[in-house]
Image 1 (cartoon, rainbow, N blue to C red):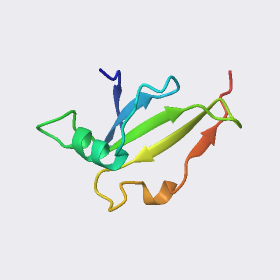
Image 2: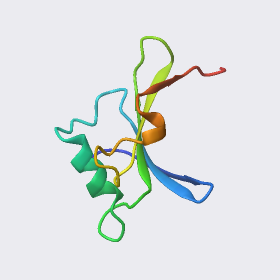
Image 3: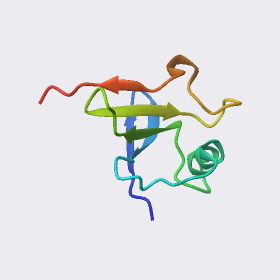
Length: 86
């Protein structure tokens, strides 16, 4: 079982998975995104956000959506790092 959060804002909803402990061991991430984001038969969402460890920041955040051919957000072609303020 994979623990997740469902978050929404500005009319969009996302599934958020904290993968800093490598709980998400999916061989085909693109297919996983399509399956969990499908409404009515799964969790359903506009996209998936995966939090992972980073060497340069507190964590790295990858954002995926199920409708693209490669399932990756076009505006976020690569993972981005976020530095927390705490």
